[in-house]
Image 1 (cartoon, each protein chain N blue to C red):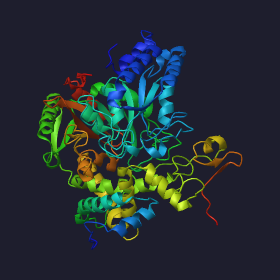
Image 2: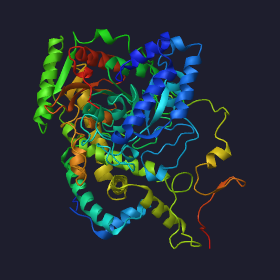
Image 3: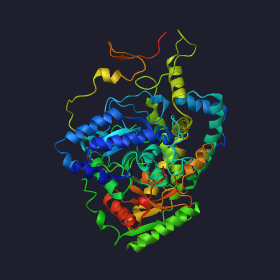
Length: 489
Length: 104
């Protein structure tokens, strides 16, 4: 079986007995061992646990019907795993071992998936390049001098480099879709509420969603069948019925209306990305879709709105890291016998435990929520957020999906943008509005630059209509061969 | 629209005041860095001030209103040892988290 086998291929081989889950698992673990020192995709590799879990799949009486039988899965290191260190790539949680599993982790295990490790990411999922990790940046397998995207960079690298056919990430402003685009993968951010977030270390609670990275749209649909559903442990999880996402995959394309927000996508986009996007739209039309010009007049305000709302929520969510109940506590100043007072202990633990970007966002969020500035920034941003949602509601009266590039540029070089946080934030221009509006959105490979850097096409769908979104993405994917390309390792 | 003017850079004391609200100590370098960068980011974010939001309700969450209540039934939860296991300082015998002395 190829290093780049799909979820479906692995699952079918394990189900039929052509391959044992332990064999598949061992192969993947060896590949991780060979590649991780270069790519830095994993913070923790769970070799023993993985082999035990794989053996359990092989011995299972229902192996032949498990939806993810023996499929190795890499989990972003902000998803709680019982007994396995979960760091969010932060010093403050470097030694944190959760006493429980996130709901998605339990669902994957029940479906026969085998966790092989926890992946590198930007600290607390704050970043677009994976450079804000306390454990160093993950590297793009298409060009290891470049970033893989972020914040779920390690998850993207794991799948792109054949170290797992499936990985989970979290997406607060593009953190699944952007690294998927930059690494040549499919990445899906489901509708807000579609997948339980119980056990996800919270960044911005009104925006965070968990979703899959995979090589194909069908694989993403197979994963969504396992991940989606109501969870009484997450009050924001939705009770809507979960369809079989694989069932409708063949239906998309022919009668589809695709909205293109011209004013937005004609500005500030790398010409190589623009060219690939134009070609992708032509392929959609060739597959029978109708292209419709639409306007999203408030989408240009999505970045400022996002960075006001997300930092405000982050400053509140990260207040829990205070060196008391879990995580890092700074040693008292003044050496042995000395004792800090409580406030000093909080302040120093957070100073030494958090990295620069996390502190920057806590500062910004604290400021925009503070007395005298709340109305001007936070409340105002929430009002504009309503206008952004209405933009999409109006667009969806005329079209089923909206198309944009996923990222305005291909992967940039490690270190190129670290000195300019604002420049880094602008890279999220096409992804943040789906989070602000709660909509499902997917990135699919749509081309390469001349120097073999992947480019992604983003489709955004209606609330809870992952079915149409996936079938549209599938129809496009079947017109192309981009998804078959693999990096040289 | 609110009459509102943002300083392009923050003063040292403003940065220290925000850090204090966030229980965050910063070193000299960070104070200078954030004084400049927060000013730049907010100057950019100020474009939202030009959008007319008269009568527009705020969006705090996009979740549709649904029944999140469930019966209040007693069930297993974390045992005390597990709950204390990640604490940097705790008394397992007393079942308590420990913090530095707060009363003289």
